[in-house]
Length: 148
Image 1 (cartoon, helix red, strand yellow):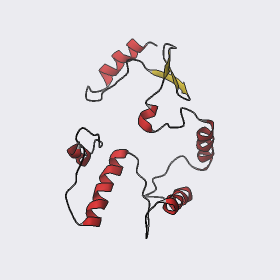
Image 2: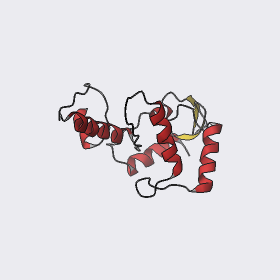
Image 3: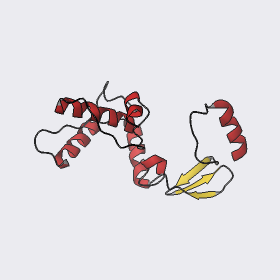
Image 4: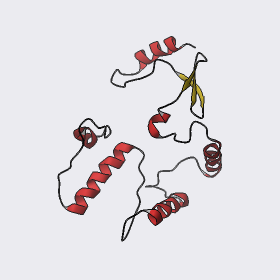
């Protein structure tokens, strides 16, 4: 398999609206190092767009994933809640520098977090207006795109 062949396949299978920054395809990764399908090595400065701050395949993260897989693979908290999510919310609430009652909600994407932050701010203030920095990226939801 080559990067060029994979790029041809990607162009045939995926829409142009989904941008790709790199001209190589990842085969494996460890810590901050990526290897492409042709065996070349790269330093990963993007970290999965800020989701891999411990690097690829950090042993503690891998161990936690393995332990979780022994219990259950996935459930939507909104449908079937689970204790570890409640425990994490309690830990975050305990250290949040806010006076009064605190609650934590988890979201899958940054766009969901931005959208919900706006809804919460509007509800808390009673004001509909929102100020956003120009040129920022706020996600691909309708509200996020309107801010961007």
